[in-house]
Image (cartoon, rainbow, N blue to C red; front, side, top):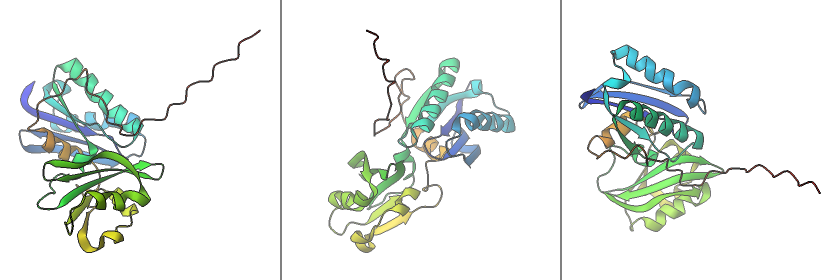
Length: 229
């Protein structure tokens, strides 16, 4: 295992992405829109990238994984895959949220808002002012997003919104205060952004790292068979 090698994966949205780093240098990456096919596409993407650069999983000292929120199935696949690898190899693991990933590189004196599609007419939203979280990760009806952001924004504060889900929101109530950042890498969570965020973080415990669903997944329990008299 080489201490400077890091691999990052994200499957929290329709975009599946993998990135390999040696120190601060991006060695290789791949990103594909696969909708909900992460279960079939993730490991082949990782394997193909490793083959391209001549690495094996045992060479990687730290794995970074997107923990959501986003697609329930996608997040679960990504986290389970990364945990399985680190438990087999002894590598470190770090979880990074999709809401942090989409705003990577943005900041300054603006209120920075993350937007990730949540389905069911909702968006996962988070807002930061510098390092301070002013709106914790939550799910909001699309029609209510602008009003919810206005509630945490200071008067006349500039607002930067990242994440392609922001296209679904009517931002006109906030006037010209809003700047949308919807192009890569701020359109969707990407593995390279996760890696940059995680580089200076302490590792998580692989046994306890869990997805951040924000909205509880809907699970239908099987109906009990009627008892015979």
